[in-house]
Image (cartoon, rainbow, N blue to C red):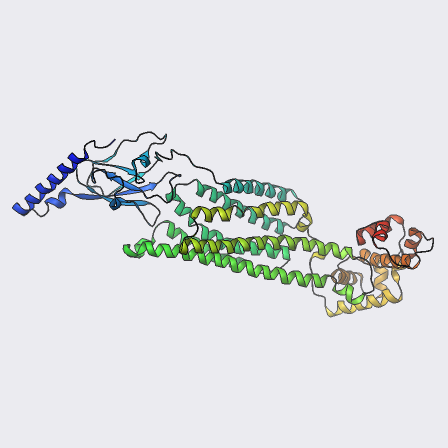
Length: 528
């Protein structure tokens, strides 16, 4: 493989140097030695994927008597991720090999077979670009980490969820589109992580530089998703994407290795080290701030909407002793949406805090390895895709839009109309009339039907028919409780409350309470 008589070769090299020195002293040929020895940069563009990250890469050859672990010829990383070493060209043909510091860790061919010495004949060239294919001791083997399987499952689950979302009809298309955008973002992130795992160490640097872009995009995307599910309107949402766009340009400059042109060679490596670290910490902190503010908005919005949804019922009709399940249905629906986005935001918040701590430890204290850092983050990240899939499939109602889903502010005239409704309902009990219509009811209130309908919808979150049925059911329950010991049928009391048929009564009761009349009274026993 190499020179079989290193002692003899060393002796000949020393003798050649003595001869050159004699010429210099005797004849004053100052350029003899410098012309005889030139230097060439060996640049390694790619390494085997299974190269151990802790091992140094050495070059040896006839320029250093084939010393396998010469510390003067360790390959150093450049700012673009490639490795470089400068070696002297001391003979007509330069021969060399790469190793990881031992003859058992020498470079080999693609099928792990012997690789002849690399050679360079042209001593006038400045650089030689090469790639290392394999190592003798690892032979192309690479164990697949567990998180790769988890990420692959997350990608498949995300694609399936997108397919299902596109097939669901009568939904809020903006909600669906925001979920699809978020799921696509996660799928692309997972795909990039898998590509990173199976890339060679040189190419990993370029891929890892995309991480700040991912963090900067994640904040606005998840905030936009939360706003859609929380019915929060923000006209300037697109302004939040200016920073990621600028960052993409900066990362492009970083990947193309233009920074060394602006800085002295002796400072560029240290500068880029702190530049990459600062960029990563700034974007993760930005994502953390987005998540915290989004979480605060969710909590405030949830509190306000829960208080508002029953506000006028409690204010105007506190005596209503029935389960307001028509309102509860809306509230449950909104609660499902808020729970979905709340858990999603909290999950990402925990991951970001974990990422910031892990990255800080890695860059400062080096208490964690890069492999642990990546696996610790990405083995849990796909869980939000599984969560989204499970929750959306089991609670499709969070994707649907209803008119009562929007909580608007009532005008002073509307509030006055609600007060009049209270007066009429308590004094005249118009709900006892089975033939009561919106037009008839609006005449009692000296109002127009469309104005009355709007006030009922926005104040009580019911249409007119369901609103009237709430009073009929409340009256029915009160009559049952007062006449518990009397032999009165449910149907007769339902007619007295204002229902015109048994089927209408049963449907309205079930819709209002979530139970049939028998089930309701079985669960709600009253004392005589």
